[in-house]
Length: 216
Image (cartoon, rainbow, N blue to C red; front, top):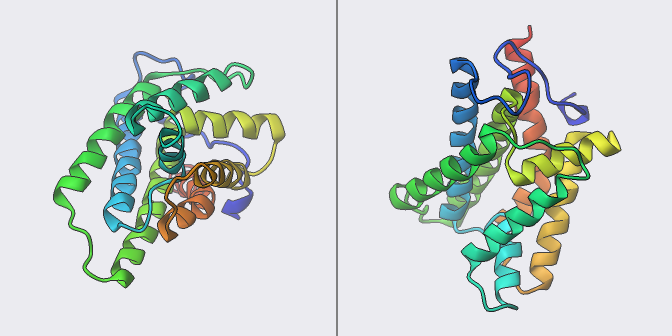
């Protein structure tokens, strides 16, 4: 059952180590493909107008209490999370940088070209699709093993330290983050809650699908 997954699967296109500056073409392809799906999902959630992701809620909440923009707060949060990697023995890699670039690009493309659905039911459906897309994309790029983005690296590091299922670790992180963001004044919508509770199982689903497709 995918909800019980406790480790990142390995495939024939997975990098042997995160710090790999000359990965195979297939490794780089799947890494970028996964990140494109991840960014597409993040963008679709924003376009759905049902609420932002938990980390965006946190950034918004903090920005309301200090004299800094949401973008600057997001950057500072990423730096803070990377610092947390040190005691978790996480190593950055090529995907740590690609994560920021590709996801940002895909979000901008979504906002520019994807219209917001006209009725609430379709907005809610788009939000559900977006969370699944983020999760599956996250699973694919994590299997590439070229390093994780700040938040995914935190998830992987905590999972290794606690030996808890990935779905539970990710869901706990997202729920904690959105709770703090909401307390600080960030805006929470149904899409935010769908993301907070659904992203853990969806990442686990992505890992499960990759394992089944490429290791059977």
